[in-house]
Image (cartoon, rainbow, N blue to C red; front, top):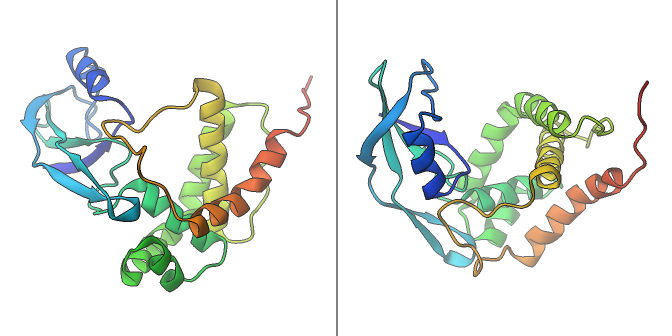
Length: 211
């Protein structure tokens, strides 16, 4: 069984896509069919809260491999929600140490250091994917300005892509979870504002059309 076919969809949409053969196997592109559910699990969120999930399991009709469909808030093989991981990466891109970030978020420093190391190892790939997605969603976007480090460049591109998606499709709530009572700390919000303030300034800059 493989875990991590993530889709930012609600439960009803996942059920509809499975019934209509919209979801495909990431290995062979075969159709995915319902195959029960994976074990119930919980993820740690802000402020010590927990999000409980019971992910749908599916099986490919061609290669017979089973997969677990995870909502976008649940990174594969991680005990924390993507919100917590994202805040840690934003803070690191702004120059904060993994120990300070861990103390602020209530996450072990070694765990934060592992997140940062893994993302830094793929920072170039993430930057490219974020840039491609951003300009696909908004072809009139200006060039994404380098942010000062490989990690910051990756986070900048991903933030730009996320902003472009919201402008095009509107804001969407995380699938199968409710974070209304979970809030990042003040320090983490400040780190996110420092990194994303340049995106807001660029997004309001005049766009120029090409002939």
